Image (tube, helix red, strand yellow):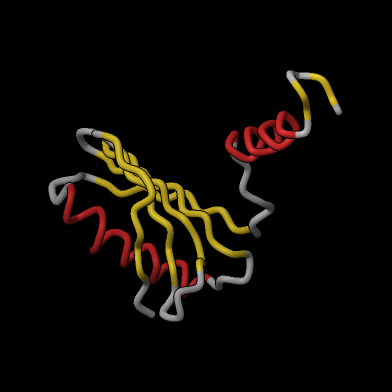
Length: 111
């Protein structure tokens, strides 16, 4: 199955991608870290993904993301985590709640 990789973040030595299937459903995430000789990845996929699909996904990550960036690497080491999404947390969510609380006040005092 061909996957779509959407870059979420990039630093000089690493990249993070969201992984989507053909229908656009998010199926995982991969964090890739480049060193002078070895490329490391942490691959997080849904709990139900079978071993064949994981191997296929790793091959596509290697061919489409790693080899295009670092074709002379000595090894590609992937740690795979299987599970389910528990939520997305952000400081912005807390700020939004604080802003709403502030709007309900008069000069810092509750109305």
